[in-house]
Length: 167
Image 1 (cartoon, rainbow, N blue to C red):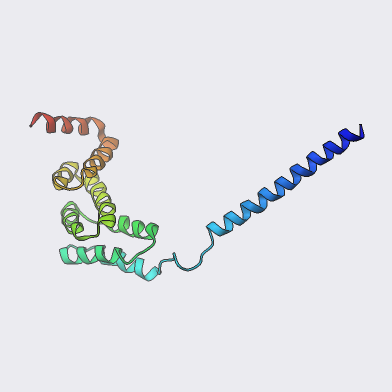
Image 2 (cartoon, rainbow, N blue to C red):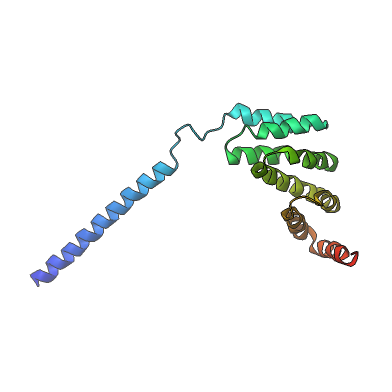
């Protein structure tokens, strides 16, 4: 009987030690993942500067400068947030011009920017969006129809059928 008590006590102690070790490891991982060492922070003025550069502009050069400002934002979240905020105020013509200007960006940023532009353009006019992406990255076509089908699947399918029947 003493053996069972000792074994039971040993199991309880072992479980308690494992629990404490697990909590300590979790705390170490949590604080190491969310620790700010200053290398991955974005100066607020850079994000605000690029947000101002695209907002309310109609000039192609200004739109292009706004895209260039995005390259100075290292933090992906801040860059994407700034990009989407800026795109929300543009019309179809401005978006089309910006899509053309995005061809000047480096490849890894170009596809991110083009997808965002095409998402916004397809929410305004999916047919125009389709005409603008011909010859660009094939995944942009998928972006258009994914967005369009969420809004009006019947219209998206009907338009897609015309693409195959016209050939």
